[in-house]
Amino acid sequence: MNINLKSLIAVALLSCFSSLVAAYTEENVKEIDSSAPQATAEDAKVSFWDMAYLDKAFIDTAPGKRKDDISVGELGIDGGNKNIIVKMAQEIADNKDGLYDSMLISHKNKLIFESYYARGRIDLPHFQASVTKAYLSLAIGRAIQLGHLTMADLNKPIVNFIEDLDLEKVAEGTENITLHQAMTMSSGIRVSAERQKLIMDNITKIKGSNITQEFLQHSEAISPESQTFKYQDADPRIVMQVLNSVVPGSAKDFIKNEVLAKIGITVYGWKDDVNGIPIAEVGSSLTSRDMLKVATLVKNNGKWQGEQIISAAYLNAATNKITKPTEEWIPDSFSYGYYWYQTDFKVAEKSYDAKFAWGGGEQYILTFEELDLAVVFTAHAMENNAMQLTAERLLPAFIQ
Image 1 (cartoon, one colour):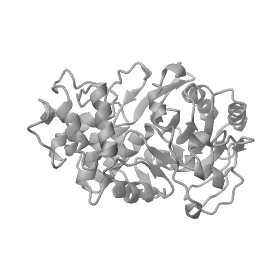
Image 2: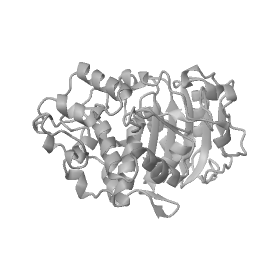
Image 3: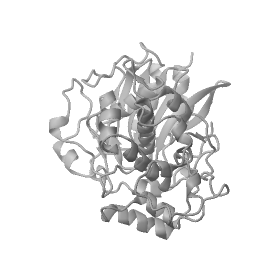
Image 4: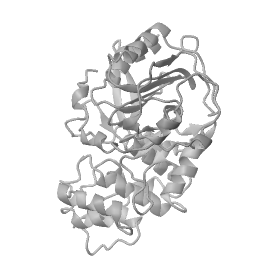
């Protein structure tokens, strides 16, 4: 799998985070037995971009046990080629492979390798960029599991779910936009860059703004020709409003209590719009260990500690090939589901299916069901080559 990582990401994806402050307070950090780098009081006060780099990288082939429900093991003993992984980690530490903040590896549901670099801290949430959309997708899957939505609802018009829409003012063809299409970046909404900026400004400043109304009212006509893949903020924003409409209470509380808390995630950040609805396309922050929990949940078909958290039928659809991205910065080998990606890694003449979430900067949550393997990367540079490292170095360490 040959990827030119420098062309993968539009710089705009990363610029959103210049002032993101992770949601961290001393009183909500759990007790730990680990020598891994922890956030200082100063780290907690400044933005991610103002945090000091670690004096020395932290590389651990036998991660410490924390009170976070993650089972731990030892690299080499519980899987993987220790020499290959440690050498790769040391090269990352020596800054040969971009500005990484963490790399974690879980095999057979045990965390067997943990490392932190640059601005990585074991207890401090890391910005997630577009991985935020993948968490929204899981929230939709949770809503289906609990009966607030059904699989059939995915093929129903979005206007069926959102209240207070003035349908007399929306674009022609609006009634043809389904939840499925909005979740595959194929809504067909086409709004000028100037109008989109105005809409985003309003939802930041003017309480009571209805972002779905704004996008639908100012879009060009919706048609089969326009309902093709277009990576844009409008689609996940509308899906988040659908979630906010169908679940008891609010989307914010639902994500907190019925998604994140269900897998033991309590220390995190997620920006809201002026109406208190979580921003859908970017704006969340999770620790690397909590990202690994998400990976484990996906790899185990939506189950966590024996409980079905996410609808298995939904998750199977969400993480598989539904559509083909057409943006130039997305590699040709990537397919798109419901805000999750899929690709095949070819190693030693055999292909391995990968289901993953991807955010600019870069963050990756990678799962390989066949290998019972989950991998997390966090970073803050556009030129990182995590996918290439995974294909050429990491996967061969786990293939007999």
